[in-house]
Length: 404
Image (cartoon, rainbow, N blue to C red; front, side, top):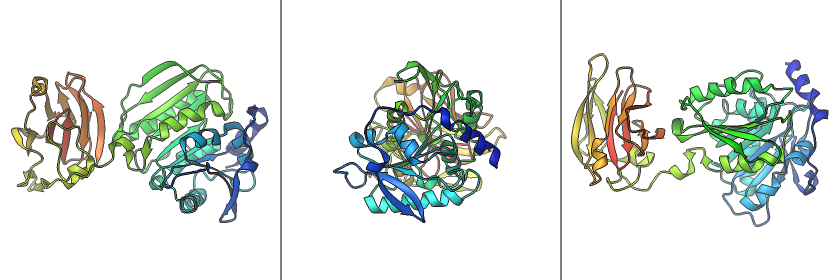
């Protein structure tokens, strides 16, 4: 489709290059992957198992232009990761944002750089400007298993939002005076992903957010499925341009994730759900617990080794009157506020938590995967809806079983 490419290219001459000096693309190592160039910067003394970030240029641009406006090496030097600037295809130096030609190539780039620099394959981040940002959104519908988080800058895809292969952390900066990809389309575009990932409908808003070039406001939706967040940095007065002013915020966001989700929520080594005095159980510990969940004859049967020591149970009944079994809880800690917590299923097929003000809430599916994390409001709140089956709900120091 030539029209969007020509439109994106038309703005190239209006961009203001960053004039802060520093390294140039000639300080990067040029490597070839399947006959196409990639410019790579690795800080001295780089540790094994470090992350990788790929920064993609816009249409009718090149790695030199992208690097001279972003200077990712300034963050890579202090944070300790490899940054790479791949070169788009021939012709308009464009990216394939609808097919799989470039997603296959970027996948090969990732594989080669991970091997060459002994990087962590679970901590690969994709950012890009304009059409490079569009490609970032397209990539999560094709190679999400290779990407831990994305940060598309001024890159709402002209083909519309993609269908992500899994919940993906997203950080999206965009200028209000963008005359190529108009700012008015940003919220509707991001809503597609907020809906896909079951994000909260209301954003947390931080006004007067610090940015060295523009007045800024940060909008955050989350936690969404699998603990991911979607964030949008609104930049007052900025036009269609990449900027060094955003890279620290991008890095501080993406570095918190690997392909399994939030890094702080890594599976524990324990083989059972933690005791009532412990923090939230990890997804792996729930999945490996000897008290597995068995479904039999349309009901949930409790196995001989249950999830924690149950001190109470509540009958679970669907809106159609079908009996699903019981919702059991762990032995109660001494904190009397925990006695007020209850978990049940609403008639419209939501898991509801009541009396959990200020408590951390984590919902696990029957495979032990985290499907939602949030914080209790005190009143009854709907925390999750999804496929029919058994779920584990960790509320503060208590663990519940319930069913949809």
